[in-house]
Length: 204
Image 1 (cartoon, rainbow, N blue to C red):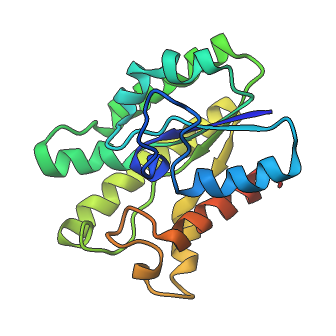
Image 2: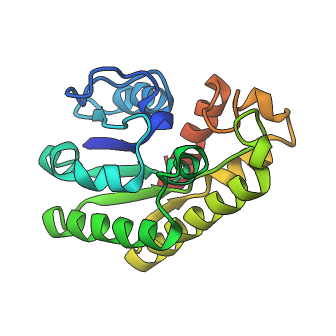
């Protein structure tokens, strides 16, 4: 079984060598690799997350970093940079284009890999130094991308992981800084939260 994790810096998490999908980084894919490979001698876990990516960046490299790798399970977490880049240097991806590009990406995936299992994880934000200054806009726009992701999961009959719900519930136990230092990038505890949410969705 070959698992591939795709996304932005949350998935990347310092993996460094972007030409090597076996460079796993130190985030939630590493946590899942430990458990998955401990229980399955034929299991491979790959990470092709790249810091700063938006959905258009995923599409541009999808053949090389996904289809050519022929995974059995693909997990995608994308959306926060499509908002964040707009708030910073006005280079984001608006919600209608986000949906259109994401749909193309999924269509191309199933054309090339008709038996692949795809897991979509919804983008999230929580309070923090990066999100607080424009909280209403930031959280509202991320919700719009999350709603698109959930819609596409339903349309294509895919597994969906509601990370916003997981982080919201976690903040009832400990405050936001326990889970993310800036409101976007997870702490070690935040990565564990993502890993647990993924396993629950996968029935593991």
